[in-house]
Every structure is written in C-alpha cells, then in structure tokens.
Amino acid sequence: MLDKLTPSQKRIINILAFCVIIGVGFMLIQPSSTPRRAVDQTPTYTANVIQQSARSYEEAIEENLATILNQIAGVKNANVFVTLERSSEIVVAENITTEDRTINEDDRNGATKLTLEKRETRSIVTLPQEGSQKEVPLVLKEYEPVIKGVIVVAKGADDPDLRLQIARAVQTALQISMYRIDVFAQ
Image 1 (cartoon, rainbow, N blue to C red):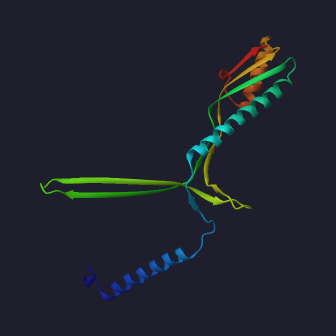
Image 2 (tube, one colour; image 1 turned 90 degrees about the vertical axis):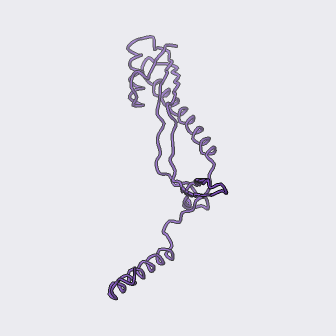
Image 3 (cartoon, rainbow, N blue to C red; image 1 turned 120 degrees about the vertical axis):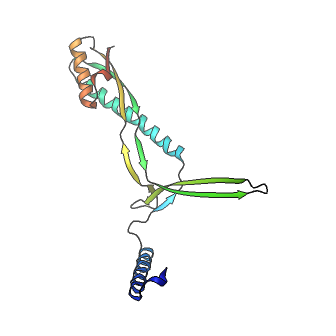
C-alpha cells in the first residue's frame, strides 16, 4: 500500500507519525497536576456511612423543628417524627476496566464451539486529601435526603387554627407538601 504513494506523501506520513509519537511521549512524561489513583473500596462500608448520616439527618431535623414549634404561641411540648423517602446518596467516580475475549474451538467431529468471556473490574477513583496523607473518593454528585412525611404531636394542637399554624410552619421549614404533614394533640 505504501508503494503506491509518492515520495512527498510518504514524507508527510512520516512527519505525522513522528509528531504523534512525540505527542504521546510528552503526555507520558508530563506529570498530571492532580494525581489520581484507583483504590478498591467495599460498597458495604459506604452504605453504612450513608445510613448513619441519614439517621443523624432525621434527628437533626426533628430537634430543630421541635425547637421552632415550641416557640409558636399556644404550642407546648412538641415532639416531631420525620421519615425519609430516600436517604442521601453520593455518586463517586469509578475506574471501569472491561475485558472481552472470544474463544473459537473446533473439535474432531467438525463442530465449532464459540465461547465469549467478559470481565469487568471496578475501582473507586480517589484523590489525596489536602493537609493529610489520606485519600478521599472523587465525588461526582451528592443527592440530599428526600422527606417522606412528618408527624407532630404537641399540647395545644387540639385547636384547629393552631394545628394549621403548626402544619404551615413545618411545610415552610422543610419545603414539603401539606399532605405529607400530620399534626396531633397530646
């Protein structure tokens, strides 16, 4: 195929190939500004951390709401219970390596056996943490918990106007729909 090219075309191809090789060499030699290293991470550890933080998130909301509601005139001893539809979710960068292999075997009888193998390896991408020797996962997205419902039990909630004020306070504080809130008298 190269025999059909003119000498000037061969020279251009040689120059382009040389430039590509030099460019690849520079990319390999130049250190990156943010070194990345893939480290295997167990998903159960991550799931445990998320579940613990979701419970502490619920408790923090319950305490803050109870404090706010107890400041409303006529409300005493407010207790708040919050349920989450979905806990917080953290999406981390993964290094995914896929290897495909096809094996074609012929036996003595003339039959052909085709075997396809696919192997996938996943590891979490980490970055060095500033000021320490630890490495932290590279976070791509972080979703906040979604509140499913709120129950408030308080003294004074037997008054319909006060019950509405309590529900509106919860609605405003959490930015959730009114149908997700129930208020009961103690």
